[in-house]
Length: 300
Image 1 (spheres, rainbow, N blue to C red):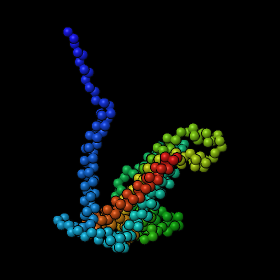
Image 2 (image 1 turned 90 degrees about the horizontal axis):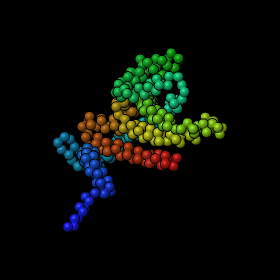
Image 3 (image 1 turned 180 degrees about the vertical axis):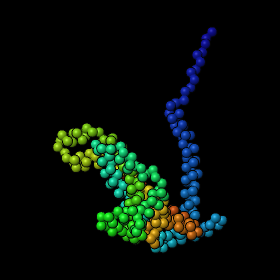
Image 4 (image 1 turned 45 degrees about the vertical axis):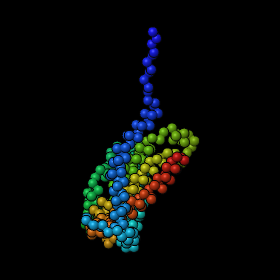
């Protein structure tokens, strides 16, 4: 009597398991993304082409966009957005790197200074805006009073059209530079000390070590700081609204504050078009900047 050995059970190939698992894993995330981002985005594009309220929507084509770029105050907010975004991001990169270098050196009270620099990040943006609005008062503000003690007449920080936008930008930098500093500290401490020791042996001075070692190797941190600061600056609203509400006149208006004012006035279609413009502006600037920074990082 012959017996036939039982055939071994078939095993699913590793390739099949590896290919099916990620597909099913991403489906819930993809559904949430489409529902919470894709659909509202497409709806926003549609309603930007209409004159709408809570009950009706009249299709008017590109009329909202034409009005957005022809009205002086709307165009002023568009220009201010670029100025504010690039000024704040540039200052955060420079100051963040400088503070990062300082706070990774052997100085007294380094841990305390790190926490002090990061503290403004934890404070409410509205609270900081209200506080600095009082401090920058041209008559009773503590800043101008302090300047007066050393014989300097402080400017009207928030009521002078030539100072207002720059003043708010400085407060934004003061609040956000802690994040930039923290990112730079992480990048700086990851650089091997051996590189600096070898450079010293070769006779490189402090500037040469900074230019040839620190700057190239801290490039990933710089890319992160630039992107985060630029996105935050282009989308800034809370601080500007708390300090100036876009004034004096339209001096400190940015796209976000213009959008809010249009909503308040009942121009829902125009304000939706402003949201689309803001979305496109941020995307059009951030994606090329990210590409260039990542390309430099790979080349480095």
